[in-house]
Length: 178
Image (cartoon, rainbow, N blue to C red; front, side, top):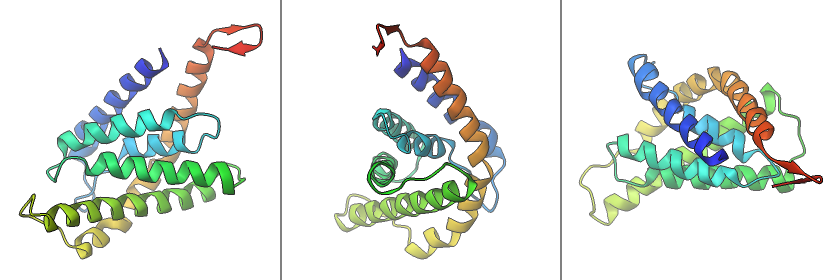
């Protein structure tokens, strides 16, 4: 049941991302609400739902990306796995705007690097004839980070409301959550 709710919210966020924010680009950059949503699930220490969120979000974004298929899926899976590993084993922190800003910067940098390396690899294997240089990626990184950073807290509110709603729908019997 919770995966159906996650899927519905992913499709809704994709529609908002492409429909609303697609019409309001800042310096040709659009925020990635699905990436922000994936980040919050990856920071959750008790579950592995972020793999589902990252895979479906990346897959849906790949359908709308003009580059080679699979770059967003791979970038979402790698960056969310790194975030989950980092938060689960190394970092003990409170989610506040400073820690979330740093984690967003790192995760976005990893995702950008994975997308660029994937494009380079596809170009070197002659599977595609167009390639975007690293200078183009790095030129828009700061603007994209700031645009995503502005929507970080509203997406955190959406995430907490969703988690509360899903937790209230779970069946609790004899102290065991099924």
